[in-house]
Amino acid sequence: MNKWLRRIRGAIKMGLTWGFAWFAAGMVLLLIVGPGAADVPFPLGFGMLGFLAGMSFSAVVVSLEGRRRFDQMSLPRFAGWGGLGGGLFGTFFVFAVAAFAEGATYIQNLVFLAPLFAALGAGSAAGLLALARRAESRALPDAGADAAELGPTEDEAQELPASRG
Image 1 (spheres, rainbow, N blue to C red):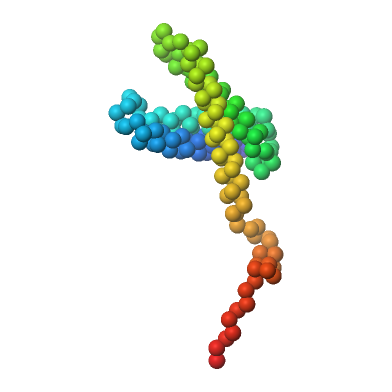
Image 2: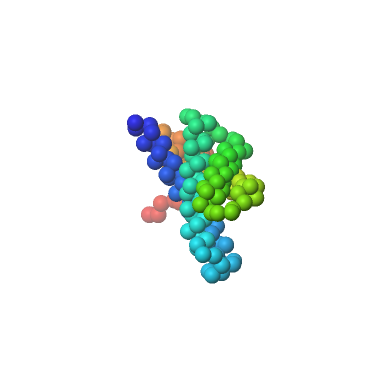
């Protein structure tokens, strides 16, 4: 049970991360087209779609990659899973909207939106992995690391100024 709770929590965090990034993209679009361009404000709509796409990406990664960590996955593979998750979400989104809209041509929407969501998902996944790797390289050292290993190397060491007096 604990394993599933961790996975659900991780999926929610992934969705929130993607939702925040897509919200920011919606803010940029809102600044470009103006506030009266749509019924639903772009940032809120994009943020919601990003949250759901991030959750679907998380489900794809957990089901297909299992126990692999971010540092064990290549960027193209991770972006591919992001594209798959975004494409699946785009497909479900089109069919869900078509179920509530009368006379909607869901094939035309599917041809446009599924690849769009796949591209957005691949870009989001690649950006997320690049960000995670960058944060990992700046992480604090382990608590058990030897202090001599953490200090400056001989090339980096500077001489202290002579004491006065």
